[in-house]
Image (cartoon, rainbow, N blue to C red):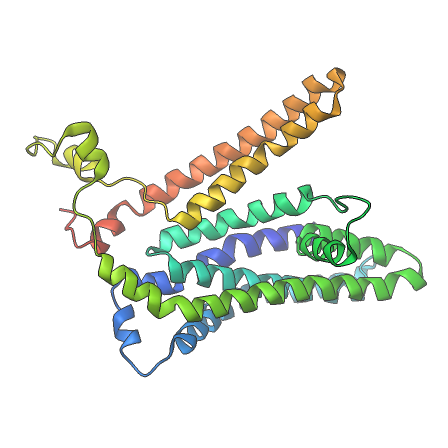
Length: 322
């Protein structure tokens, strides 16, 4: 239970603290000043990364003394305690790096934070749905890649480590550290790849965004209304209908959202592939409740983000919310 709450804290806190690091500079229009200095893209990315990462690590490490004291009450293996916190630290490192990567390539911090939140459940779903063996003739290297991809899931990894600790002495300790090693290698590769791509693409992305500029006319407005009418007696309502550009999704967000939608229908395909009609009602009921609750939570999350950034978007675009 403690580890589950710990992972929930990491998931909530890490994207909010790290995913807007570079996008904030874009919205404040201070990134060109940083790029005009002697700092390289690598120095900017790593400075932002470690400065935001330190606050997250301090918040997560605050639970270590509490859990350590519980060992005096019995029932907690010290090796499992050390392995779980090492795995949590590796997860924070990789998730923070992914947030920095999205913050580099997306123009707004809101989009970077939302995409970082969205990529986590997509990966968790894919790691659970991916088969452990595609066929009997599957090569060994592919099985190792699939196992490493699955063990990057903290829930699967922690479950395997707990089973290893509960086993006998010959099976427990070596397997525990083997599982942790694969988990840390996977997230170390994710962290390294994300930071390298962010450092290489920082200047190119900034130059591309500056050259594109901002579109002054919304395609939706031109298509539906044929232009903007005169301002009515309700200027804020007129602004929301005719001047507001609406949600603008980066192509990265479109791809991740499409994968999430397709993955949500995968359990339904498995239900009908079983071919047993007696299970349909119960299984479809469970799938509908799980999917409906998830979609409802995401919609509420989107409403909160949209409303929370309604005024700041006007400030960042140069409009005066008066």
